[in-house]
Length: 418
Image (cartoon, rainbow, N blue to C red; front, top):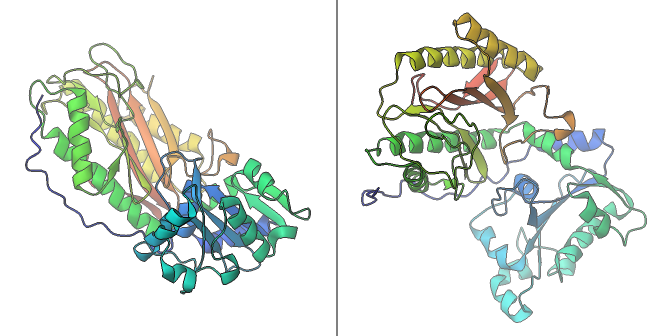
């Protein structure tokens, strides 16, 4: 199938991330409870969260190149280390951290030096102290920051504990302790700048899906649809997951498989087929997730209209029950009860939840991923899957921001099938 891209135009202006994303009050409160003197972030998502600086990674526990070192006893003096080749980006991406320390990378010094502006080494409000102006490598930069903040004889939390133990080997008085779930717990409570990014991310996803399905014509395949969606995402300023932006593959015929391989599986999208969209991507580092069911050609059978109405009733019941302190089991029960009250069996229906933010979990994993408890200011992704073949299956994923007085749904489309 040929897709006409001639009318695709850029519809966004690239803007920097907010100067501060992190919830510092919550961070220092949790450091105090954990009796940690300081914190070192080595994973990319945590580095971006703490500094608003760095590259956007799709793997939650992926090593980053922008270590952030924070002392509970000097809350106004965080330190950000970064590769010399990235320092110039400070001119376009601001950070609330003033003490920025470049370190040498694998490039020869005479080459790498060309990436470091003279202003960084000569002194500005975000330059490193002269004594640590240009560290020899990442480890030396982190160790120097630990020493300068007086953490070399304290309890230091690391999101990457194994690496942390190596980094403090030369500090006999220091102790490395795990802090990965501490940071996940802090990140689970969204700040207003984060909420704005997540709203925009969800809008990009929704708009791209609505535009992509309007390009359908006989002969259109699953991979054609994925490409049409990805192009719309790029035009709107988002970053689609590549090569498979859809997490669920809607298999043809009687195959009722829920999760298949959307990258490899391809087939024609024929009229009347129920397509489940669970789309993934990012905007300024923050994830979007979800979608709902599209009936190819726009003419759903009466049977699927009835089960879709029950699915919407289940989603509404879950959102009504979705409050801080609620257990996941309570939310599942509310959804299943709504199906039965609508006269539809909940046998085989799958309902599950996860947090959403800088990754597709963004919650404290020490609390488990089973019957966990919803937190205030948490972004919750609700999935409802009604099983069946290509003409019966349904999928709905709703994204909601949880407050004590109710939820804010991020999708703004109506309750009809896509």
